[in-house]
Image (cartoon, rainbow, N blue to C red; front, side):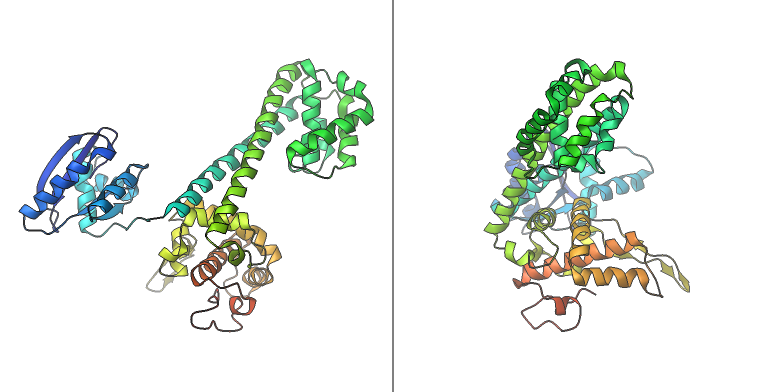
Length: 420
């Protein structure tokens, strides 16, 4: 089936991709039940007992097809969009595209077993996946707001960025900038200077709570107040730039608050799955980091092995050899990019706090034979972390440092496999 908004195209084929029947239905995706019944009837007339439904897993329409096929006891497989695109080009060396052609291409790929069984998640795992998607979007918005605020200040008030080593990472600096942008009407900083150091400090303390801070850094507040007299920058642009920066700061604060709420909900879902204590038994891995990984991977039990999960993330090595030639191996880069990013971020923090992971990183970057650079070693550590998460989540046992380091074999039915 080729799914669209209002037009659904179905082709019933046998195991050799010979067409038994075709049909075009002008309906929504959730109204194709009659089309599935028609396909099943055509297959039975041709001597088959049932059908397997194949489609592209694009958007959310395939989820509706999954529900309708499950109600009828039919099997469902999905075909990757990139395979359909490449097969379309191989068809006649052009990029001709139409719904009937795409339906036949999907059918041929399915008969050649270039397909996969989609994940059938329950309500809890589905909620975690949606929360993970929301968190990824909020992180992108938060980073964008921070970069935009820096660019605006570099243009009209560069001295403010010199008051802290990492200003955008300091809640004190963010709270102080909120006070400045709120008082500096028309780009004039004199109203803020007239507040005096004490009143300015009190205003920053009140604003600190809305940014999620608890302790204030007096050095940053004093340095920012002293920078109010700096006139370096495009002063004529200060009115518009400060006004725009104020909007950006408000958006950034709201995004950070929304991100904290989403992360709290993700940890709550992890508690419902009874996985919080297991994944946080891995030193250096926070509950939020583990929830982000599991939101992208889904239930780890659906993978036959930990290596399958690593391949799903695209963190497995790609061989490059032929005969006596031994080329340079790289990461496959296939699979789910969001899972790869989540594993990389979680592995970055765990690499410093986890002694086993730190030792593995040191070994990979210092060994004499096949030494890896820092980026390659971090990718290998991220893959190792995925194997550990698969082990503790599937076997329902806490993390064991000796087993993870390979010093002691895992007992049958318990422990986690050594991450080689």
